[in-house]
Image 1 (cartoon, one colour):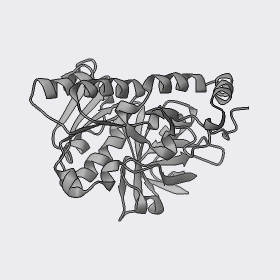
Image 2: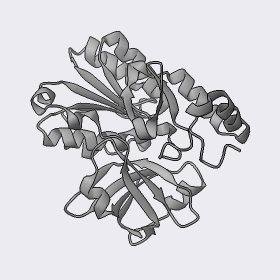
Image 3: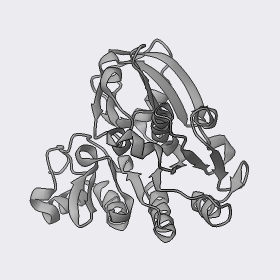
Image 4: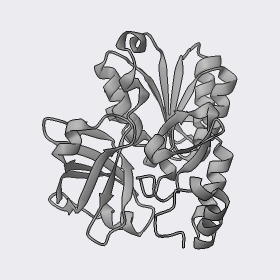
Length: 293
């Protein structure tokens, strides 16, 4: 069992947990994820790591209530425990493998949308520890849904909160803020990292292509099984079939076929759709989830 040592509510449907998981904390890096299960019969939920403390042996996860399993998790308190907490899974952020001298010479901007702020935070924190101050755009529909702003300000260069309805920070979509920073405020960036809803990442990539900024995206929103077995996170990157959970979750955003990935997510939700995908994709489907029969 994996004890929850800290629990707090970040927004109406978003909760934060520090979980005792020493083996995961000892080896995880920014960009990786864990699979969490509440009890023996619970659904397996892949969640990107929000933070970790190697000395305390804790890993931080942030959960948004979107289904039955996450609704139950939302009610967990300090002292409760998860039955399973498996990881670290996936590949770490490519920044972790980059030459530090080269990395310190780069100007980096992160675009975080909604719950995507959680996996952005450990990357910005890690960069700060290496002497790199990245800028961050944090986007949400309203002020009440904006999360981790203070934590981000403690480790980032500049933080630009943005709300769709203009209730806080800059008004409008994150892409508007990104364009304003570059075209109106004289900012220049060598690389952008976008993490959030699929549709947001798609339009960030369209914007950065216009601005000639190389862009990394995290495809964790399409993961289900988290081990490469179910085929839910199958996508096309630069014409090649990839799986977000084992080949990513990070990819070159300008090479991801977002339209195909979003259409596939919709089809995958039904048993009939999964059967159709298995038939169409053959050996590249990665069956084995038990849902495709």
